[in-house]
Image 1 (tube, one colour):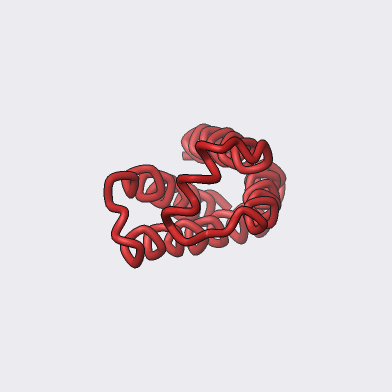
Image 2: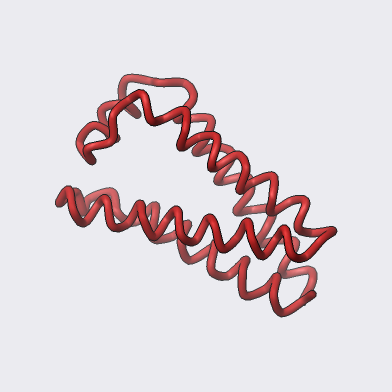
Length: 116
């Protein structure tokens, strides 16, 4: 089961790091997507820092399970919030991405707790 934990944690960390990278670029398309959700551009860097902390925590958590569990739980809460923001804004066309990442975060949490 630890192999599954490593795979899910590494995939999730890569996806999270990529998402953080997109936010840090302040690409106009990304900025517009977040503006439709009601997220101002000046918050993108803060969101990216949270994501990078989560990605790092997942990787450190492969060696120290409490960190991995905390990072996965934090990411699950983050993406639950992202889903709520999509619903509140009525932007359901792009809700699939945060739902998928939410599922990965929950899977990482369950696996990490199961392999301590």
